[in-house]
Amino acid sequence: MCVLAARHPAVNSRWDAAEDDDGAASIVEHGYVDLGVAVATERGLVVPHLPDADALALPDLAAALADLVATAREGRTAPERLRGGTFTITNVGVFGVDAGTPILVPGQAAILGLGAVRRRPWEHEGQVALRDVLTLGLTFDHRVVDGEQAARFLADVGALLEDPTLSLLVGRP
Image (cartoon, rainbow, N blue to C red; front, side, top):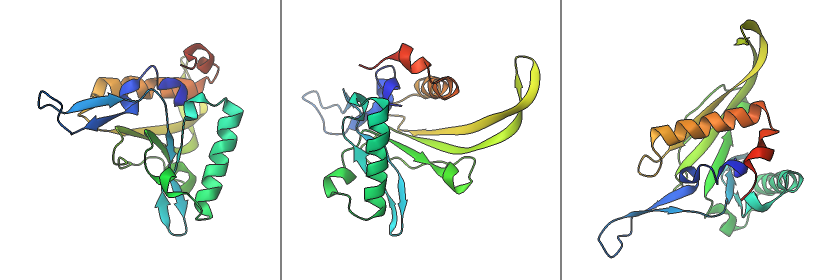
């Protein structure tokens, strides 16, 4: 997701209801990704975030997310990590669920839900074969993200999951 934030800034934005000088609310695009991760804990769901996740190389991002999740499950998340994220990912697939409708984290414009990976018969290049299939779901604030933007973002996420080497073409900001 982090590599796609520059290409799809609307999903990494927020609605600012505070009126400006003209009396209108506005959309605020973040120039960084503070990646939230929904974590199931014994005390319920929490969504800590990783500041500046887009600035991390993939191995560093993986290590930082593992630490963030472990800290949340141990109940040691600092309060400032529980507010201020810019985009969240939730994985209902770990519970064997194919899809869900995640609820937006207040102050964010979108949340990406990942379902379970399943082997399914799937058409590919004119042939039906067993393939790993994953359902993606995106909940978004229509004041900030329109349906076309959401669909294009999901298509890019799907393409990136299918071929991770595409992240080299997308690049980092």
